[in-house]
Image (tube, rainbow over all chains, first blue to last red; front, side):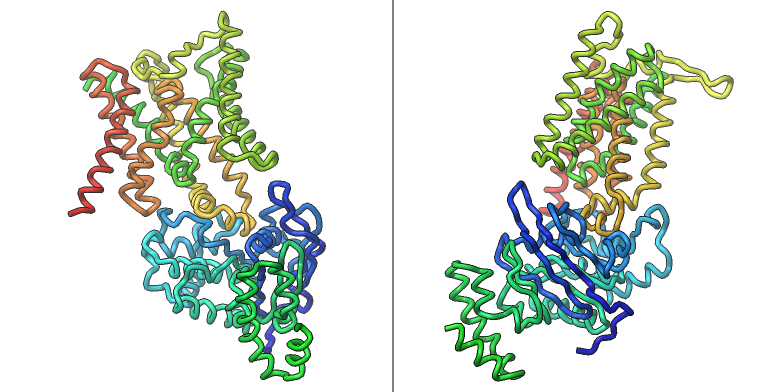
Length: 278
Length: 282
């Protein structure tokens, strides 16, 4: 992997012994991991495993019961400008009376410029972001008229306009068409190749292996994290998805398909794992 | 048009316009009922301010009302975020409790409080021309008109300053917070403005009908456009037209002006819904 890191050498994101609860039910329990720069990272786990909660805790949108988070080795407030958060598409009202461009402009809003007009540089960044996701021609359109895929592109453009080094996205592939999926993946890969880090909450195991370089496998507790081949094993997936039979039957397919690329890279690794698991 | 009619219509229009400006964001933030809550919750603040100052037309009342409106906002946030109660339950508890304290205070100090409960609930815009004030030689006219004009100017200035903040907060609060924007500052300043408008509306349209002025013109405007600034402008226009229409309707049938204003606002809404359906079909 070519790493053109923008000056930062340590872990981009560190989560230390994080526990968090919702309505007094624990959702995250003692989560502890660190992520290096310049990769696409998937946060994967079954429904209700705390994926979204983890992201919200990292962004300080929820209070953790214990533990703490470091971004670029610092507190979130010191590095806000370098972090961009993309909530779930369903979390906003798409009937809200704004245009595509207005939403993307919000990516340029800062506490300091909130009472001023945006500058020429801001408008350039907005244009570039719209261009990258292929939404420039829709810039004047009202967001209520967009398809699900276009809505997600707008959210991505808003994040790009923030010009961050770390992107945290909650389910950007949900409800989008195949063309948008490819377009989003292309944009995210480009970010990675520029040395930026993209962390994505993702619920679909089938595609997770294709998309991500690394994974954080979650089920309230941290099951595993690291390079995808280390995480995407039968044992870990079973631990995360437990006795969910329907999932398990699907899992064998997923693992079978995921083992092809493993074999390409190193045959030994595959035979060791595959046989031991049975 | 007589000068009295002009004063009444203008005062009503200014209050309706201020309400529409703020109401647009209340509607977009799905907080229409928060307007209702605040309109009731300002009561104890008004009574306390009245008891302390002994006057009915003082800035103390405005301050008292704004303070207790903010207290309601704060209580709602507290119950919702800290006690983890549902938001609608938090609203329901906070404003009724504060309103109850207001009622208790009025009934206890009934001898000393010259606050007419009818007037508090329904307002009386028809008395606007009777309450004269003069600013030296510069201007003289009804005090409510002057206060409404100041309030409208304040609301307009507030909105110009905080337009981006409110837009961001209303569209996607989590995103705003992730940018490091102190959303609570915008939320509370906005609620303080809603409280101010509400208390002013007390003597003009009353505590109940102000909710309609906050919500109905803005909701009607939302039917017609999906752009923010046109929506706000349209809401103000509907509000002002309601003041005009309401006055003449009330004069025509010799009824309550405040009631007529809101009735007209509701008719605009109804007409819009019907027109939209007809336009969509053709």
